[in-house]
Length: 239
Image 1 (tube, rainbow, N blue to C red):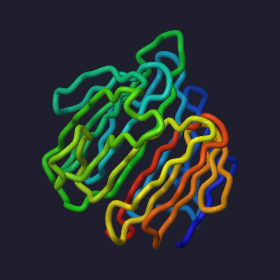
Image 2 (image 1 turned 90 degrees about the vertical axis):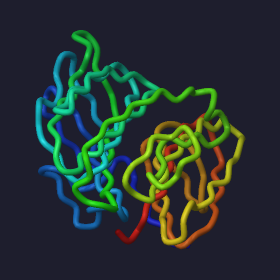
Image 3 (image 1 turned 45 degrees about the vertical axis):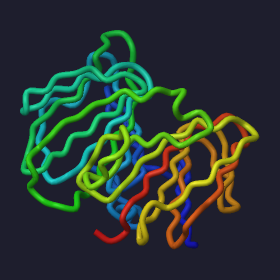
């Protein structure tokens, strides 16, 4: 087993007034040669967008873009004709493929919206762009894994697929409980991002927004020191 620790306070930071962002990996003007990507996981941004503001129409291609709203509401529009509003417990996937334009705006004029936006390199290029969004019930992740993202080759389950051999799972682990995570695929690594709380895994203590990347392993145990929300991204290390 090999591990790498990414502490919350060492993330990149940007304050644009309307946008306060924390970057787990090099992004825009923030660059850290030790934090370019974790396998096929390229971007993990922790964003807070001011009321009525957001990311205007802009292009993407050949990237799997996953968005998870934590607080507030986010309005999505794209060149495929999709329009929706995301709330907490919603998961959005946009496969940019051969190219798409989209905008992401704070739906509220009075309250900020907080979200994670995650980019994963796809395992095939120039696919037809697509959009999907689903709501995942919080009771289905209490002290157990809730699969929210799966590969396009997996037919079973309610998770949204992406064009990569990657799996995302959430868990709301109550204080004093433990849970085992099992690697989904040989050659994959797991990036454990602690959304909230305090956990112990591989002998390390993680606090809110800390992360640990684990490779060359089959299972790892996670112990909740306090009520915790955990996101595990099971990612190909070679792509």
